Length: 104
View 1 (cartoon, helix red, strand yellow):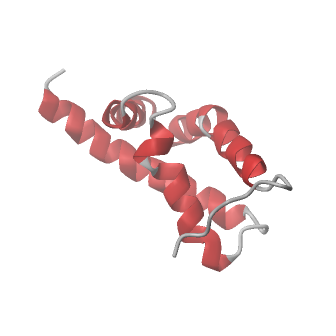
View 2 (cartoon, rainbow, N blue to C red; view 1 turned 90 degrees about the vertical axis):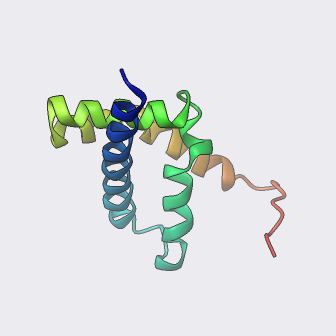
């Protein structure tokens, strides 16, 4: 695949991932409105995507899945593959006794 095609798919994949993250966040009553942006960032950041590989490649694969299989199957893929890691990371943040430095 040409680099330009990869980037184009990644751009679409980024949008689909953002849509999934926003829809999921809005369904979570435990996430306060003031915390939504931080949760969104943690779900869509390059650092998070690097769990599966190079972030542009990961977004490109999401974009390709969207183009070939449609939105419903892509959302299900994200639910099955990305959400478990999101939930694991959230649980880890809430563990008692964990010191987390506040950003100033």
